[in-house]
Image (tube, rainbow, N blue to C red; front, side, top):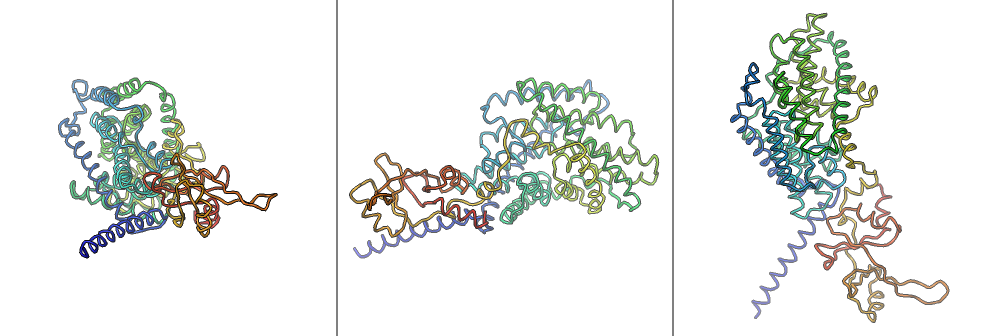
Length: 574
């Protein structure tokens, strides 16, 4: 008998310990602070996100080998069946879209940004299959779209879904989403630092130290995964970059102004097409994009694909100026048609192609007046790629670091910075340009703006502030007064006959020397919620309390009052 008692005590102690550790774990994640737990989870989810992206890349490599896209002959496109791949791709994308629900058709970077800002980065799992296969088809069939769109979407889905499965606090789910995006970008381009900066500049849009380490670990994981499978490859390290003399910088300044004008024109045209086709049926938009892409491919097949063909032409030996100008116009037209009419895919790849062509054109035009510029075409090409991405996505630092990692050459830093600044100023101040992603959200009617107060409250979970010293009793009027007297100032909650939770209070009457026992209904929040949900529940009356539950309201774990919430806001910690 004694042995059984001891064994039962040991089992109880183990359960109590596990419960304590789980609660401690959730409490740590609810804080807006860096923690080992946060970093460990980010690394775990980054591995999963990286595996998904590696699978996507391997599928794309297999498809390109099968279709021999890289060896397409540019001299006999009319008789080559691959010239008509965009039409086949449009029909396949449309058929796949019919298999899924209309609720999950939105995808891409802009959609992920919307979910990150207003839904704690929770991207529906149901949208992942559509993004994977539709983007794969778009890239296989030579639409002018990039690989980073599916990488960002799939990385966000992988991490955020796993975070929800683990029932993490919402503030941590958002960090996991950002980490998954960083892993996806790094696994796609083998550019971990650029992935970190892209997430902060484009997705998070603010810098917080407790975001930095999980995102950095995830980017490292993505880059290592890419190197293990594909090798330590820098995609554009074959571009011949020569250090440019200082006396060329006035020419770079003029080039920056020209790049800003072209970027503004591209942004305006893309947004015009996006707004025009926004409410058209999907099949119409896809077919128009396919027809435009096919016609462009028949005339100028180098304008097809993500941007590699265009970059190869820009850095080729003795390129024709007129040919590069025609290719630039064709590439811009194909990209505007594909992205504007909703073909799944990213924008960075095509922007690299367009920027490379602009840089090469500027170098060739300048070399007519200044022959000494001719050897620096490669550098001008990389500068054009950097400025075009930086201006169009409003991410100049991420663009600079991305090209630094992709070329594996630090000599681009100073001239690229020198060109990007005037290009950015001309586009944003001279032509009132804005980030393409934010403009897309405005056109689609998807929100992304959050007030600073709410944004600060979203960074902390309710477990940080909730009062765990409460008393909860069942509905029994005869005992309630006695319970309240013995509570010693602790909140007293009552579960009524309908199972709802009420707050018990003892109120003094104004004109009588007596007290009244009152019961006030309380809203409830799961312990995965943030302080922002508590604020929204109480701000209308600016008083009262919310109860916090774990799983169901049968398991209340804490109480948050308006007074405590107001003290937290005034403390400057949110």
